[in-house]
Length: 383
Image 1: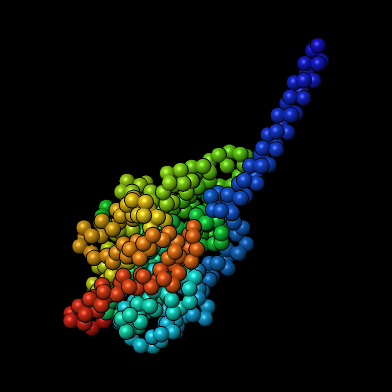
Image 2 (image 1 turned 120 degrees about the vertical axis):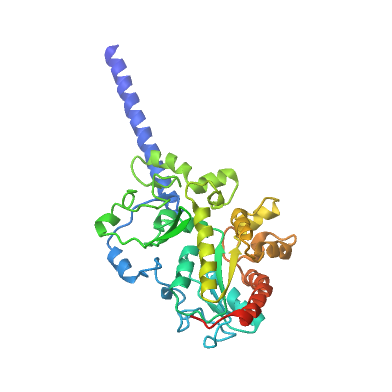
């Protein structure tokens, strides 16, 4: 009887181990799939890291602006404008990310080009795909070209996340990419320069001490986890990812970052960046315009009777006396009974299509025209 009991116990232990191994194998597949979707971070090989350091922009981060838009860049680094050309002095200069650049459409359909046609003057497009509004502001700050009487800084709603991020791989898990970021403490905006890590430090990137002031470090408040054994535990921990939390709440992934009490401080940082752009543009004798660009998910929220996810930022800017063109309101009116994705290249996350970009330009036109007239009356010589 004792021998039979031992055999049964042994068989049970072996069966349990087999089941655990099978479950761990399935979990490993799940971790790989979620990693490909950006929900779980996997350390990258440092073999190409020195090449990246040599090619990136030393101030702005990510790849340098000139690495985008091959064949569509003018000599001054703006996106080409088939309608207005690239040599005339600009009446407006716009800075921002891919929504300013005009991703997924040709140069003539980007909103700055459409705006230039409406205004009858050149609008210089300094948009750079992938940039946060912090990098877009830095590109403006570092620019020596201040000839345009009006300057526009675009803030795409999801950029609030980028504004508290320093390493892109923690969010998208694809390719190298470091950037500077701003901190707002004690009522002051301070720039943390782009990180320059040694290869040894890069290999320890998951350690919070290697990259301080990074909100998306694995194990932190964003819920990012590193892919490691046991994969079952990694898979369970990944359910705390901020994007999973948002799905459970039925909200856009970036919505929580607009909370005044969010641990990242993203709302305070973003507000301070935009207000610093306003201050600097005025100091340079330009009329500043802030443009809040809605994502498809923002418009879905409004159509459902809920407030814009970026409403807290908008309210702060309005309270500061800043007039902000109502692109979201114009989009809702233009949509009528249509789904919000009718203004984007596809449903479920994309850039504007030509109709959407034209709507942005039309929303800006009266504000810009008024700003140009005001600048012509009051502007001193450009610095």
